[in-house]
Length: 207
Length: 350
Image 1: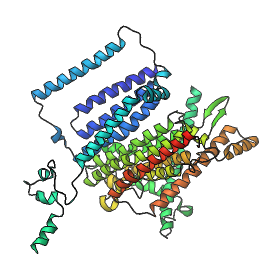
Image 2: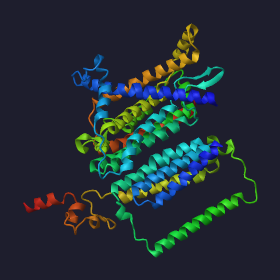
Image 3: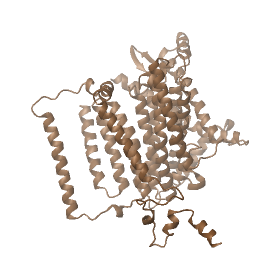
Image 4: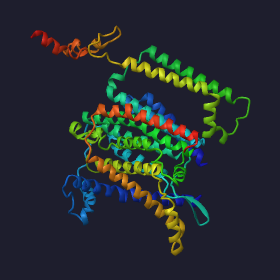
C-alpha cells in the first residue's frame, strides 16, 4: 500500500520533471529538472529492490555527469534568449516525428516483453549485486570491455580536438583560433591571440 | 515495525543532537581558538570559560543581521542553496556505525541508523549531492564572483570525487562488502591505515578538496573572488553554509575514521568496558552505544583538529595546480593503490 503510493508519487515526479527539462526556457532550470528526474528514478530503483543501482545512479549521473552539464551551461553562460531558437515548421515536424518513433519503439518493446506470457516476479536473483556482477563480467564481458574501449576512444578524440598548438609550432589546417577572435568588435588581432609571443618579437624587430 | 521505527528515530535524534548541538558550535570555537593558537594570539576568550560560549554569541549575531536577497537573484534557487548545503551533510551520517548489533528487549538492533548493504556507495552518492548547493548559490546570486566560485566548485569536486571513490574501493576489496559495519569488523586486529597507507593519503587529500577546506578552498578564495559562491549571502543563510561545511567535515572525518582507523572499535576495549559497566548498572546496549559513539567521536575529532591545523598552516593552491594535483597525481596514485590491493587480496596477503 505504502509502496504503491511511493511509486505513484515518484513516477509522477520523474515524468513531470522530465517534461520540465524540455519545457523550461532557462537552461540551468532545465538541468536542475534533470537532476530531479534522475533522483526520482533512483527512488524507483530502491523500490524494485536494487539499492546498488540507485546508489550508482545518484553517484554517477546526479553527482558527476549532470554537474558537468551545469558546469558547461554556466561556463558558456547561455542566457534564455540564446537558447530560444525560432520554432519553425520543420523543427516542430521533426520533433513530433522523433517523439512518435520513440513512442513506437518503447511500445513495441513493452508489448513484445509482456504479451502472451506471464511476467516473472521480481526476485532477488534478478536484481542482486552478485547476479549483476557475474552477468556483467561473465556473459557480457566482451560487450562491457567494448563499451570501455569506446569511451577511451571518445576521451582521446576529445583531447586531440581540445589540444592547443604549442607556442612556435605553426597552426595546422584544422585550427580555428583566428575564426574565433572577435575581430569586428575591435578586439585584439587574430595573430596575437593565436601566437602569444608575437608582440614581443615584433617589438624586438622594431628595435 | 513500531519498535524499529522508534529505535531509528532515537538513533537519528542522537546524531542530529550531537552534530548540530555539539560538534558544529564546538568546531566554530576550535577553529577560532586554533587560529589564535597558531598565530600566537589568544583568539576569542571573553565569553564563558576559555571563550567556550563564543559560538552562541556568533549565532545571536547572525540572527539579528539583515537577511538580504539580491533583486536580480534567481529567488527560489537562492533560497534553496543554503538548505542543500546542510541536507546531504546531515543525511550521510546515517551510514556510519557506532557499535555492533546489540540485543534490546529480545531484539537485535544494529547501532547504525541505516543498516543498508550498499552503505559506502550510498554515503558517497549522497555526499556528492552537496556540490549542488555551491553551484546553485553561485548561479542564483547573479554575481560574477559567485558564478566563478560555483563553476570552480563543480570542476573541483568532480576531479577529486574520482580519486576518493577509487581509494574507498580499495578498502572494500579485502573486506568483500559495501557495508560499513563489515569494514569495522574486518579491522579488528589491524587498522586499514597500515596496509593501505597510500590509499589513506589519497583519501585525506581528496577529503580536503571535497569539503572545500584550505588549501583547496578555491570556490571561496577571498583574495580573488570576494567570498566566492556565498558573496551575496547574509545572516542565517550564510551561517547555514558555514554549518554545512562543518557538518560535512565531521561526516567525512567519521568516514575516514571508520574506513582506516577501525571506526567505533578499539581492539576489544569498548565491548569489554560496556560489559564491565553493565555488570554494575544499566543495560549492555546502552553502554555499548555510548562507548562506541564516544570512541568514534574521539577518532573523528582528531581529524577535525587536523582540518583546522592544515587550514592555518598551508597556503591556498592556484587553480591549475589544484587540477593538476587531482588528475595527474591523485588519480594515478589511487589507481596504483587499487591494483596493488586487488593483487594482494588475490594473492591472499590481506
